[in-house]
Amino acid sequence: MNEDLIAPCGMNCTVCSGYLAFKNNVKDKGIRMPYCQGCRPRDKKCAFLKKRCGRLLNNQVKYCYECQDFPCLNLAHLDQRYKSSFRMSMIANLESIRDRGINRFLEEEQEKWHCPDCGGVICCHNGICFHCGLEKLKAKKKLYRWEDD
Ligand code: SF4
Ligand code: SF4
Ligand SMILES: [Zn+2]
Image (cartoon, rainbow, N blue to C red; front, side, top):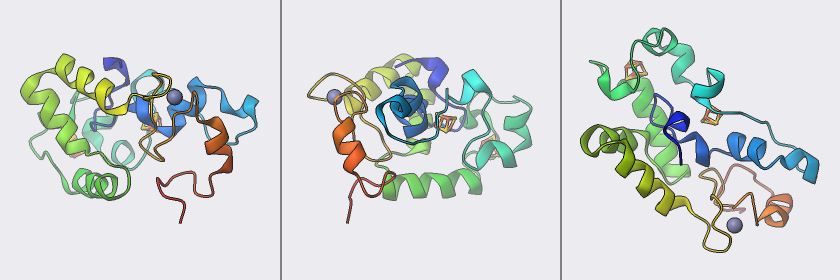
C-alpha cells in the first residue's frame, strides 16, 4: 500500500478494479476490463467527485477532509454507494487518515485487503484477488459486484 495511491476523495486506488486490472495486466490473460494507473499518478478524474469539484480539479486540497464542506453531498453520495456495494467507506478512510495518520491507515488497509491465499490484493469492487483469482474473475457474471446473483 502506497500513499501516492490514496486519492483525495479517500479512495484507495490499490484496491480498485481499474488499478488491479492494469497492475496485473489482465487483458493479456483474456479479461477485458478498463485499466487505470490511479488518481494521483494519472491525475485521473474518475467517479464523480473530481469532475464536479473545482477544489479537487485545482488541487486546492490534498484530501477532502481539508475542505470546509467535508463531507459534501457528492462525497456522501459516493460513500453511501461504496458502503452498500463495495465494503468500504471513503469518509471513514479520510477520517482515519486525518485522525490517526497515513501510515496507520496504510497498515490497516494492507491488513483489510490482503489475499489470504497469495498475499496479493483483494479488489473492493468484487472481492477477488487479481493475482491468484483470475479464473474466478473470468467466470464472474457481474465484474463489479461481490455476489454473482
Ligand atoms: S478508476 Fe478511480 S479509483 Fe480506480 S484506480 Fe483509477 S482513479 Fe483510482
Ligand atoms: S469534500 Fe470538498 S473538496 Fe471534497 S469533493 Fe466535496 S467539495 Fe470537493
Ligand atoms: Zn491471491
